[in-house]
Length: 344
Image (cartoon, rainbow, N blue to C red; front, side, top):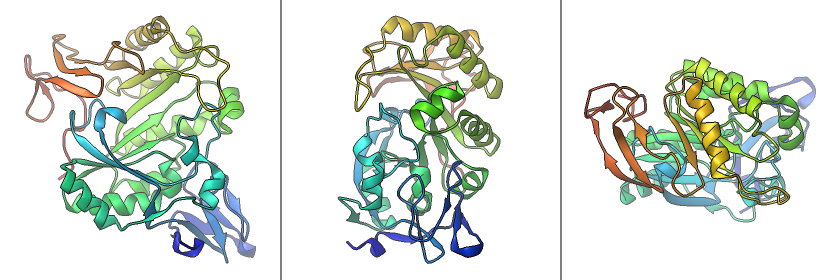
């Protein structure tokens, strides 16, 4: 496919005097000159119009919702996940670096033409209950993601973004009609680490998480615990306190680091380190804290009132489900926070 067929005019941008454009898809707010792309590599100024990827996928796969991970959104459901190329971060530990690569975003090595209605139809055929924009950073392809999710809405499918959370208020307003759930990475809680490792800032991520909650998205937060980088007692405690100050019902997934991509000089995260971080989250008042990327760990959802295991999990499989009605403990009736079905 030619480059002109890989993109359509974006909606999240503003023209500037002299032919430049201001991209509004993420908190970098790139000012992009004619013929140039933003930091993500995916959004390009062509003749004073910002063009964004549209009409194709680089990856399309059926996954359990727990793999995203969402533990409080349609437990046990199948999702159909789709992605493109490019990212607005530069994380040296990226596990999807082939899809996140900026050069690949500029000239996609694989682009399977597909329409939103075909993706929605495939989700229905598979029995999926949720469409998920993921694999690369979905904010930079927001126009395409919302088109697919909007088509899914017509078929009663939920919609989600799996994101680094570097969203602008304008992007969140644009996404809200079609996106129900956000999985957000809170990678670090130090500005200097965000700048050095991801080429980004902490404050926009904190602001975006707060705005997501205020705008009614269901939000689950993931922190990859990296030895010697973000695992100090002070940083974990501050992160937990921040999340609890926004919502004690917001799930926090603390996952184990495995050496990958360009970061191979650090050991795997120990189960003991995960457990300590988990305890810090619970001590801060968070009701739902989980650990991942290790065998065992804290995978089950417990009722904060009676302590009953409401959702039991083994890996990505739900083996016990005691949610009654639309999100209450089947034992004591306490409401369990989550996204239990599409908005009506």
